[in-house]
Amino acid sequence: RKEVEQDPGPFNVPEGATVAFNCTYSNSASQSFFWYRQDCRKEPKLLMSVYSSGNEDGRFTAQLNRASQYISLLIRDSKLSDSATYLCVVNGWNTGNQFYFGTGTSLTVIP
Amino acid sequence: GAVVSQHPSRVICKSGTSVKIECRSLDFQATTMFWYRQFPKQSLMLMATSNEGSKATYEQGVEKDKFLINHASLTLSTLTVTSAHPEDSSFYICSAKPDRGVNTEAFFGQGTRLTVV
Image (cartoon, each protein chain N blue to C red):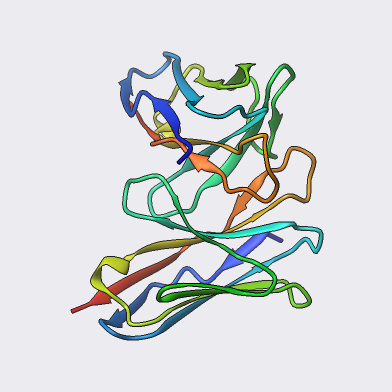
């Protein structure tokens, strides 16, 4: 079983739509959770960390459910510039503090 | 913000030659750095964890004799792809997590696009 699993999509949504991505992780001892954004042929960049209480940054809301071992990302009022691949990242259960990535979910926002 | 510099950004080499990729943390120390590989339309796959002053830890299925990792200082890790073959062509990305702080993000280099011909 993969450490982190995501629905690869693709998600094609119109501008202004709300879209949600989910991600599950296998190890209950995982400590840190993040959503990264990767544009085509570029390195991943941090979108937001995910905290136990849930957190919001503008149009983006991240939530963590430790009991069910899943993480979600909600994007409201989608913009064309939101088109990218969104990577769920989980960290910390092994020595060495590795970061493990989900397969990524592809989002295309359509005019 | 913290910066990780990766060099070169793009390299084309002949089959059978070796290629070295450098990853530097510019404004923080990183005892641990990570090397990933990404094939087209796939996610990043962790290849190995680079530990300063000790041997790297390789993920299952990654040949340690082919992908040599050296982490000689707290700010530099190198990945050498030895005897490269066309199937090694990929996007290689390093990342580093600052030693200070907990639950901090990882910062990524710009990536190296390797093409073996």
